[in-house]
Image (cartoon, rainbow over all chains, first blue to last red):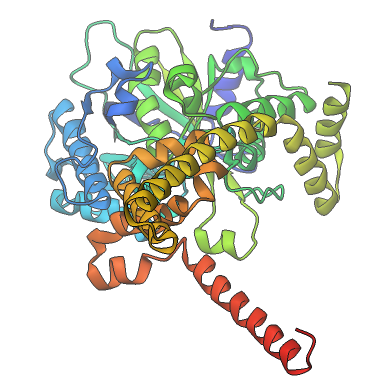
Length: 359
Length: 166
């Protein structure tokens, strides 16, 4: 799968300074991903990636009284799981960078309160994992922190309630609609190599990031978020190639967050127009996470948890096993609220690129 | 296929944002799968029809017992609303609506569902600010504009009556 040709040249180019091109950073001391945790809901557990998650929780209420508390509990469980896997305590973590989809980030603030870790709450809709990992990596590379947790979550019912209709309301979901993933993923970034990794397992590092701009191609249909976000993914991926002067074959996989079936085709078409063919190495977390045939999820999965749990389970596993060497992880977000939608605004998108490498 | 390809290249090449967005929206429309209207209509006919058959069955039953048509209609409405709310609470109505579409939306059961579903969802936010404020989030427009339309029609009727047309 990996194409090796003139890659060494790029690596030298990447490492000579931190600011690269217009929108990218190449880390001088690439932060290590020393641990990751992914906890998912029942439906995600029944999907193709089900057996890769650290834990699948059947109870969609997570033992709580309401959806919001359920998501907070889910996020707390995930953060604790990541700490446990890294054999660290909460006091070992300098910062937590996290976010979710609920208004005013209540899943994050109520979820991680108990952990007592200094927090940067971030919102990038479903692109939040990319944003959290980018900022976390910047903190670690800049020596502002030795260890940082980047975490996001989403919950199907909480998101439906906030952005669409009450769960039991009878309506038809269009084919372009996606299904919000119930799940939370966390990575622990560190300036030191993992002490715990198995013999022969590579180190996983974040070598660089490309931060996305808000991209608006005038889509107004909030039920077609793939189409709204595809241009943002296109711009970020294209900028990543240009900033680092690389071609798609630099990566073994280019992994978008939750474009779904509609958005995936659009992204590939858009990049083709710029003479970048990513069709063979593209993967979308929203497509991977559910079985479209049997799980009735229409365009695929979405939500902050979608890219987060896919990255923390499947993507990291492929990197650890050496199946992929380099990936560009590009979570994508649709920046809308019910108010902006009702007021007739478009649905702008954003996408954050994170370059991850096994070495 | 030729047409689609030219569209996406138009999107990428277009410098004027407004025009580009128009091209993009057209292109997206082409590549987004949609429901088959015929299939939707057939399903709505079958499921909506089935709900109406149940209603007719209830009316006939009550009529045979009471002999009073008005009373039987009222009982039927009550029963249908009860069944809709019960199946909403049990999470069944949503599943039916997935296939039934307008067939589950148009009968009175659809209206009952649109009131019961927010009641279930927002109960956690309290009796006043939860259920009280949000129970009509979906049905509200129907109630408001239903009453408003009746008022307008009433007014027209009154005027026509005064000038002796009706």
